[in-house]
Image (cartoon, rainbow, N blue to C red; front, side, top):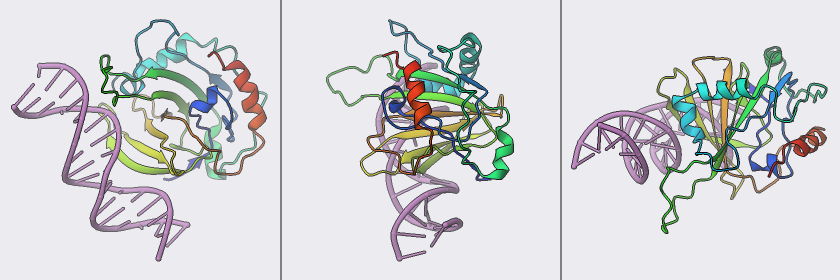
Length: 213
DNA sequence: CGAATTTGACCGGCGC
DNA sequence: GCGCCGGTCAAATTCG
């Protein structure tokens, strides 16, 4: 069941510059940006752990900020679907929501032995029947683990571009198996490897809304 | 035949 | 210290 869907990953660059955002064929009727933390002294939100043991967090995100993250919606935009036909039918009711975690620090590992540098993780959940969201980057799977309290395994991917160690993990929720959670870690230091559609302009628009920093 | 995936082993952090 | 758990490695296998 290896379908592939062209959604978009957005490592950091989503908030900075370049790359495309959802350059896939995604008619995202509901599209929500969700910030689980304020820039002030809120506690950390370890995205990875919230994926494992508290998937409800994401639901909260979705509920709380339904009004939205600055009205970030793309319903009028309809990027060219680069999706294989058999998956296309699954894209009828897609919704995407985001959770941007701060550094996933274990609360105290900040000594001079600075090897515990946790990169920020960016997570978002997608309502989709397919697991593999093709974002234009090339990923190599390097692991898969069963997740506690979840009947679906979590898959670990690494960007194959040389010198780029961006990682992502993909997991489907048992609670709502229509939801796929994708977590990105790191920032791509190279352009997208696959030729891009005309979705760049959408991204540039979105960045206008999504540059709080 | 090279690249990507699979999958059990391994490892480090953390809680008890 | 021990065991659990999330994450990664790497050899074997499959795929293109």
